[in-house]
Length: 398
Length: 81
Image (tube, rainbow over all chains, first blue to last red; front, top):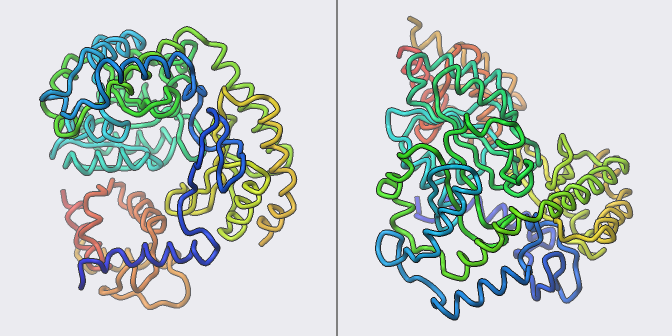
């Protein structure tokens, strides 16, 4: 068997899309603002960017990034362990820990690396990772890197989690439960109060990935753990800078002093270049903004509720609850592509998600709403879906 | 303690509703190549087997499973520990 044989199924999958006229990723030819870009030569409303707070063009963030580049250069050219720790990295770690009311914080180069780095450092062969079945790829990959035993529990099902905790018997002190604040595909929240209670009952540890919930949930924007009132029961919070904070990077905060040891045990932390000064500077500015401007969160939720309600009223099958991730479910790939193309023709970009990236084998037209969207833009997104309803209804009956 | 043949028979029974068409189930049947399983179906099978035996099957074993026989051998190990 050739080295390349394993790639053949990917060729076949790409051909499936090519036969339907999709040959490459969407290219943003020009980005006009946090909510608009030029795609295929025309102006589009961006409704698939995870730019929840709309901060990618915030003047304070841009100014901070520009100044940092001028003063510190374009990149660190080194890992955190070598020459890649600048004062900005250390300050951001302190500010993140303070934001969460935690003692310790560590910054990673991406959100993906944060999960890889944390899971592989915290667990090893002999330990158990109990993960939600709909976890992000970075969680699955981090689990594999750890060498620990990986056990899935049914998505958002505390009863199934408890069943599996019981089966572990006296191994629960060596068990790390991993869930997400908001799940990226359908926008649903984890039942975190129940999960945290189980963690306490069985003496396990709990890590929550707040990638899609930082800035979005909780009175201060700290995420689902804050909203659910269980921050004191969560052992580790992981997050990303590439959504609400409008940059790229990742982090973990905790009250466990062992988090400091992760710096010396986590290969994804040690053996990759650190974030560039501009990224750290804009992230610090963005963190300050989400800490001090709760009105952005209110605007985000107004937009999210407006779009969810409009699409719901139109009869679209959506994720289970209103959220800044508004996912329209379509069972048939041809219809999903037709709808997605139709939206582009109406000047709206959303994410087309096909299996195996979807939770249940269907397709998704995944919208992500931003505080940067105007009410008119949200209406335009909804109107684009409305005008395609006929195609959608055919899809549902096909 | 159950023997291999008993596990095999039970796995056939649990697999049967998940297999489309009149495909014959054999020990050598490859889940992907012969039975057309995708990752979702594999996970459905795991859940059924987990509930049936009241066990949790670690995902770590999946790379070592191609055929029904591979699965039954792994299952024997998990149930016996």
